[in-house]
Length: 285
Length: 266
Image (cartoon, rainbow over all chains, first blue to last red; front, side, top):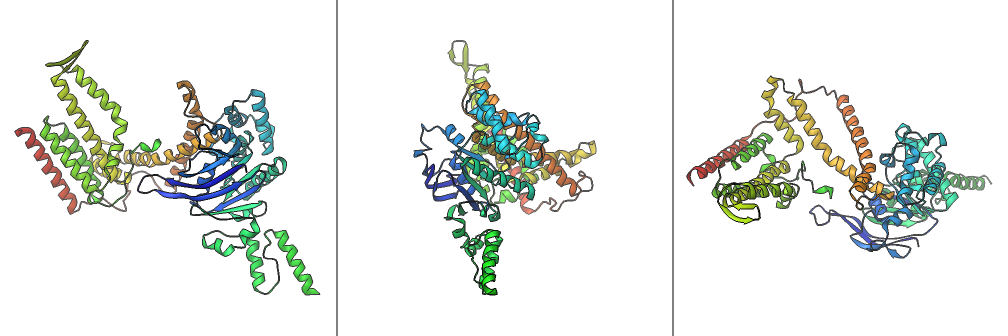
């Protein structure tokens, strides 16, 4: 296991009258080379949990282990951890500060104390991965469009070459096209490098098709942690906590209720179409 | 770390003090501050301390919150004490090398500490029990007569309320940007003075940009609601004195009389 979360709880405003449990007894295993979707409502604790994974927050109770070593231990190198577990915050474009795009992406690797050639090599590679053309390297980050800014910010974390990449709502506030572009690039990145990606979102549609595993969070606890099909089977429970399964799940379930023997486990449009074709050809005969 | 700043931090609860008209609280605080500097005797200060303790008790704000604001001015108090101790002429008490502590110096230093402490806690009571919006409303109304002298009272009050409103927002934003840069390996806690100052650039640049962005958004939102300055603008909840406000004025007056009597007679 690359990361192991062991009975972690976290209290906001510890010792204050208004303190509340943001995380409640979380246990998780995050292996290498997996695409994980983390779903939950605003305030479900998903962002808080993500900030624990690279040591930005320290658990009130419990432990987190990276490669078997406790990350809250005194002698643990948290800077190293942050380069291995890359965290892209919500609206990451708000953290851009350098005079040009290339220099901003260099910030991460520079903090790791790498030699200059290595820094520039990594920055170029990262910008290429997120599809920023070379002629934009010398532009000010503030001249770019919203989607481009966000991709530059993601490149800033990628340039540290993390083994685990956490993206907190990477599509928030983007138009459908910008959203597709970002999700496409994440998928491609997975295909090329086989790093573990945790994609945090509140929209099932974002993650349903591509992830290997879905973690559903509700009120600081893990509600489900399973493959997408198994999670979507609980679509009624998901609705009760204000989340929704993909549209396809609803249609297939409605069809089944009206007497058609379709596969309710279908999560993508292709699978659904395939299942429907089978049913109709059986009826036709 | 950044959360220690109590300036403009309203403490949400329900008490008589919270419900008072902001003008009463502003005026009361001002009179209280003046009363602290009126006479110099220990009985007067004891009276002032008791009065403040009673107000805090009625306000139902935990005492902890009052003291939190003190941390920031501890340094100021220390300097005042040092200067008063050593630089007041009078009857020598102790002499170390060229520095002399006088009896008058000790007296002055003690009174200065008491005064400053009561002053800060007294004004904390006001900010903790009054929402920033209420406070500026009160200020605007109280300074209203200055409009005749072409002082832009409304504009100043509006700027103040916006500034106060932005403090918690910017604190939160700072926290967020700091974390985001730390996730990229930034280090804010180690290194010498120059390294630390340099490390602040990745924090300050995004913070400024975000402040401008928010200010721009706010200006847009205000214009969208036809804000054009104070002229002809009415309030949804105009400030009107009620019975408890008059009683509060009487209480403050009674305190002042006692304080003056204590100063003159004792």
